[in-house]
Length: 416
Image: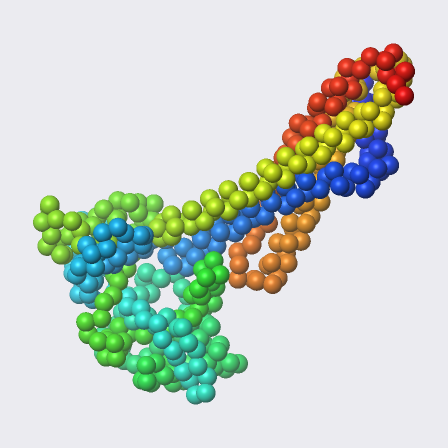
C-alpha cells in the first residue's frame, strides 16, 4: 500500500514537472477539453435556468389552478372544430360553482372568471403601453399567489357594482407614479378614469419573455362597460390538492360537460389547460439546447482527446531512454503506465478547470447584463465536468501509456 501511494505521488510530481516544462504545448493540448467543458457546462446551465425559471413562473401563475378555455395550449390540426366551439362566458363560473357545491368531497374549490385585454394605461403625462388588463371578481384573491404590496383588492360589493377601481402591477405603478404612492390616484384605461386602490408585489418575468408586473386588475363588471357584455373570458378553477391535479381535471371535465349539457357521444366543446402544457412546449427547446451542446461537446472532446493522445505519444518518444533507465533500475510496467496516464489525465483536468472558470465568468456576466434571465451555475455541473475530464484523460492517454509500459528496456536504452 505504501509503495502504491509513493508511485502515485511520484507520478504526479513527474507529470506536473513535464507540464511546467512544456507549458504552451500543454495549454494548446488542453484547448479541446476547455471548449468541450465550456459547451457542456453552458448547456447544463441553460437547461437548469429554464427549469428554475419555469418553476418560479408556475408558482406565480399558480400550479394548483386549471384553466377552462375555448382553445387548448397546444397546436391543433382540426382548427375549424375549435373555432366553432361556443365561447366561455362569465356565467360558466357561476354554474361550475353550483356544481362544486353539490359535489361531495369535490377536489375543486372555486371557479373564477377572468378576462384579459391588452392596452395602454395613462396617468397625467406618463403612459405605459402593452399592459395586460385583467377583469375579474373579488374571488380572484383565492386563486392567485400574488401578494398586495400596498392598499387592497376590491371587495364583492365593489366588484358586483362595477366600480371603476384598479390594482396596479409594480412596473405600471413605478412608471406612472415614480417615487410616490399611486393610492387614490386616477389612471386612464380606454378613455375612462379608474381610481387606484392597491398595488401588487413585484413578481418578475416569465423566462425573460413577458413580465408579470406589467398588469392591471379591475372589476369584471367595470371592464364589461367598455369592452362589451359578450366579452369572452377564461374560467380559472382552484384545486384543493395539487397532488391530485389529474383527478381534479377529470372532475372538472365532467362538471363542464354537465354545465354545457353535452351528450356522452359528443366531443368536449371546451379545453381544460394546466401549467404542465407550458413544460411540454419548453421540452423541445431544452432538447434542442441539449442536442446542440452535446454535439459541440462531443466534437471538442474528441479533438481534445486526439490532441492529448498525440502529445502523450510524443512525450513517450522523447523520454524513451528515461523509460529504459527506469525499467533497468526496477520500475514496474504499472509504474510506467501510471506515470503517463496521470500526465494525460492532469492535462485534461487542467482543461476542465479552465473551462469551468470560463463558464462561471460567462454566467456571472450574463446575470449582470440580463438579470431577468434565470441563469444559475449548478455545482453539480462541476462534478460532471471533472468526471468528463478524467474520463477523457484516461481514454486518450491509455494507449500511449500502455505502449510505454510495454517497451523493452534494452531497446529503449539504445533508442536515439
